Image (cartoon, chains in turn cyan, orange):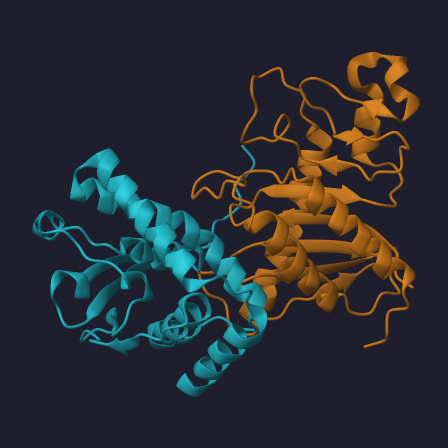
Length: 188
Length: 212
């Protein structure tokens, strides 16, 4: 199963995606975060805003991934995690995080990014580190938004970040509940 | 040769966000446009540009297919209680949704593949009557496409998939101005989307569809 996602991700990356210059993307994102910091001056608010922006991106990304690949509905959370890591991240960032840290009830997992492309060329000032800024928080929003479009309500947050001195970046994903499909309103 | 009659697009909130028709007798849209405003001038079939809605049909040649809903008439965004709504069209959309929803659920149940998340694991593709054939396609995100064609059409699944992947995703999902709200539905009001969809359907209708 993992093989098929890996192959799908590679194929999608090679053929179905128009690529932009990585540095342009990284610098644009960096200046976006800088601007947000200037505007809000509060790291928690910036984190929340990045998450919101990511969410708006994520809801559209779900349809985009489905349009570009022939992925079917995943049977369980394990398959979903593999798809997110090997297809989603591969297609849009060209990195494949490792899926680790499964909880005992299989409702939580971690995506471990050894090299996060958004972190290139970036250094956080000590004040930002102290105040708890998660630089790539937009990724959390993206994962949350995309999974919500696929009927999974999740909580996604950063656990470790290279920019804060940890050895790797880790995003934790927790499935809160499966969302039911909406039923048409009855005649009233 | 396939004759496509009309298409409905429903979003994950069970609302019809787009409807257009190409060959239809007694359409609830056409009568609406004609009785609109009660003025005979407007029924030249040309510029029916009302300030607050009605069915959207604005082209000089009168050849453009009618489209529904517009934000002025959609249930979610009605500006005031007096804004015009096309009740006949709304009811029809609800009926169509009910039919495909129920049929899809029955098929899922019979396959023991029903789940509260919906989706189409049972593989409901189409049904036919004496006069038309209805084709259905559902994306895992909950967007549903319903296309009615003449009875002779075999499988329009590839067509509907194409519409989803290359037209809906390209022009609607990727449009930053199209609001994707967890609670409300936004009608699709996008000229590019309409134009590309109409062109594609026209191509399909004139090309020979290989029997599958």
